[in-house]
Length: 95
Image (cartoon, rainbow, N blue to C red; front, side, top):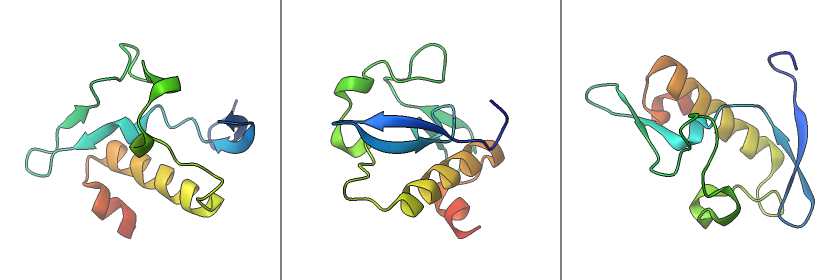
């Protein structure tokens, strides 16, 4: 699949969601002082998948039943930008 293409995925009870292949960017955070990446404790060794995906906490879910698709895309984009540019997510949201 080419970069930027979107693959259909399903969430929960077969509610459709778009996957942007962000490589778990939302599971990584940039340290505000050092700009180093910190990883979620449940990020699998491959660095691209969640080891508890089926049982992940509510905070790790963007449910399209209550979250507009545009907000999900914006969230994913901000996470990717934050990780790629090593900037805080708050700065990525402003871009």
